[in-house]
Length: 489
Image (tube, rainbow, N blue to C red; front, top):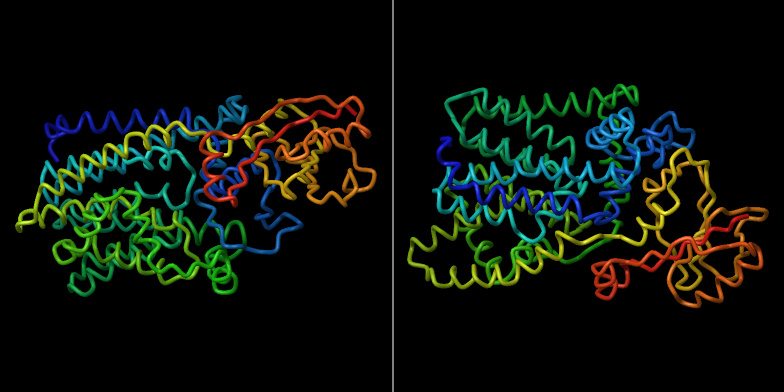
């Protein structure tokens, strides 16, 4: 793409950057369990000399490799370690910087999405794809999350671009393989996409691209997985083997889902109806013209559809590719006589629905009460604190993000049954008590004042608007009100 062409995309790129920086500032908290507890809690605890998830072999409680790639977690560890070296230790400031880095990195998805589309189609179609990648309602929010499914997408897009950029330049296939191998080291399932790329070259008898691409993927994977695991465990690919073993034995039992069409609904729904339906139609329209994109994306989609453990976020990795193929495919339909008025109508409806959703998600603070409760007890150079999580109102508590308190050594005990002793463990003393939910809250507080007569309210932590909405939609989202009381024992 020539430099002058970029004048046509300035507005798209600036919009994408602005939205992502706004999300980095305002979209605090974490979206789901994995993007915090499998990334931030692990790497954050390592910097402080602890091993929160008991993943490291020198932890006495470690039971061997569990299948967690150390590539992405390790990068976060080094980033947090660097911040600590320069004196930045406040957990909220650290997370703001993490989100900003992710926001900037995610811009590559927009840039290369535009370049890929213009290479395969034209500038007008590239603009449509650019706007969708820049301002689709979920993109800024997901771009600043620490999700294994979403963070490696820029590597995938850069790899695709190199495959298409100049087929006469053999080294491009090697570099593309290296980038996809790096993406694979973030999330093992991306290997299905890479296999799809290799299969296209294999069955087209394009041996040089096939071997160079495969060599690049294997080289990156051997370095990031084989070498790293050898250093940590004493033998290569320990975590990958642990991942395969876990999924063979336990993965099919975890959150079983019999909806075989779920991922189709997710891809259509994210793009909103009716536009999502048109892009879905376009996706299958160009299966022959753009095999190098379609076959890997289809294999990825079918693999996750076949695998019993189905969660919505798993398919997000191919969302940009789905958008590119879908938009280009619908352009083919319009050229073949399909009513273009339907596209214009769908485009108008999309923006009417997308803009309010975009504002809402870009500004939303997810899991707010949990983050604020933990941050309320953070103080530099703090001694370990014992915390009782009192959840007898609703008979449950939530897993709390210790990163925000920086208290890795303290004891955190749950009380979810009114029949349990008030202290749970005999002789246990607490510095703070977290009261979950407002059910019978005055009575529960009064009980503990019999033990801690000097107990004072420390902070009230309310869930965000989104947290409340999600809980109403699905009670499994336990985004509750939390009161933090200091015992002053």
